[in-house]
Image 1 (cartoon, helix red, strand yellow):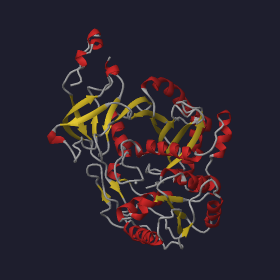
Image 2 (cartoon, helix red, strand yellow; image 1 turned 180 degrees about the vertical axis):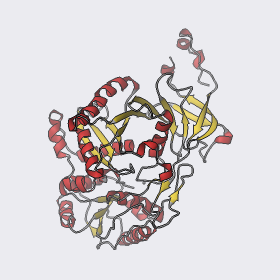
Image 3 (cartoon, one colour; image 1 turned 30 degrees about the horizontal axis):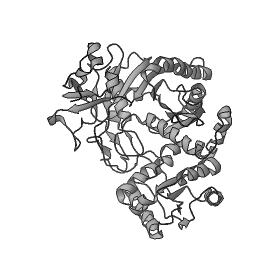
Image 4 (cartoon, one colour; image 1 turned 90 degrees about the horizontal axis):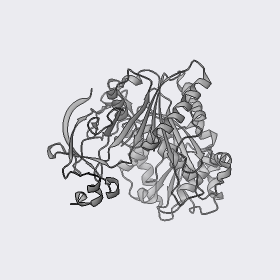
Length: 490
C-alpha cells in the first residue's frame, strides 16, 4: 500500500484516496467491415476480430515493374536480396499486386559525411525505376541520409529495410512492407465497406489530423515541427501532408491558414468537390491550452475557407486527441481479452469519469500487444453540426483507427493524427545533422522542402515508410485506476 491517507498534507486538505478502483459502465463499439478488392473475390469483405484482420487483395494498386534493391549494409549477402525479391513477387500475387523482377542488386558502402556516390546512384535510377528498396545497417544515421538525398535532392521513391529485417525476411514481414509500398505508389489497400460507411462520409468531407512535435529541453537550437495531414479521397484512406517549422516550444500551428488553403485546393483538385464538412483531429494539446488552440486554429481554418470563396463555409468539428494521461481500464476477469487481459478493442467510456458539461470520452481502439492498454481521450472543442451526435463522433473516431495504411490492426488513435505525427518525425529526419538558424526559419523551411516530383506524384510517401508495419451496446463493468504521483494527489 502506498499510504496516501497517512500523508500529513493529504490529511490537512481533508482528502482521502480510496483503496478500491472506481467502477464504471462501458460499451463496446462494433468494428467496421473493411472492403478489399471484391472484383478479385466477392469474399474480400473483412470483419476485424479483436482489432486484427488478415489482408486480402488490395482495393486498388499500380504495377511495380521497374525496381531495384540497393544494399548499404556490408553484412547482407546477395542471396538474402534475391530471396527478398522472390518473396515480394510471391506476396504481391497474394495481394493482387503485379510485381516484376528487380534489376540486379547494387551494393555500395554506407554513406558517411560524403553522399555523392549515393546521390549519383539515385540520379541514374530516377528515370529507370519506380522504387528503390534500400537495405540499411541496423545502427547509424544511414536512414536520414537516404531520405535526405532521395526526397530533398533527387525526387525518387525509396523503401528502407533494416539489415536485420532483411536477414529474417518471411511472408508476414514482406506483406507488411507491401502495405507501405502500395500506398507509396498511390494504391488503396482497403477502405470501409459500404455497410460500415458512417453518415458523415456519405457527403464530401475532409478529415484532418494535426500535430506539433517539440525538441527536448536540452535541444535549444532545434525548431518545433507542425504537421497537418488531410484526406483527399471519398474513402478517407489517402492523405496529403504539409509540414512547417516554427519557433521551439510553440504549440499553436502558426501557418495553419496557409496550410489549410493548400489542403483545400488539393482536395478540390482530387475530387472536384468542395468539402461540406471538416473534421479536425488535433494531437498534443494539454487542457490548459484548449481555449488558446481553439481560438487561434479554428479561426485559421475559417479564414482559409473564406479566402478561397466568401460563400464557402463548411461545418467544422474540432476534436483534441490526448494520450498523455494516467487513466487505465481494467476489466473483470470474465470480460478480459487476450493474453494481456485488457479491455476489448472498441471499448468506450463516455460517462461518470468524463466532463460534466463538455463532450469527451475515452476510447480503446486497439488490441494491446504488450502491457496495459492506454485509452485515448477525445475532447470535442467545437462542432458546427448540431445533427452530429456524440455516438457518431465516437463511431467515426473508432472507424478511422482502422484506416492506417501501414498495418492490418486498428491503431490507438485516428489515422490522420497518426500520419501527422509521422510527418513531423520525417521533418526531423530531414534536419538531422544540419545546423538550423532559428532566426531564419523560412530559409530552413525551403531547405527541407520535398522535391516537387514526390509532392505532386506521391503525396502519401512520407506517411508510409518503415525501417524494420450499429454500436453493440454490451455493458462491461470496468475498474478504472487513475495513477497519480504523491504530489498530484496533494
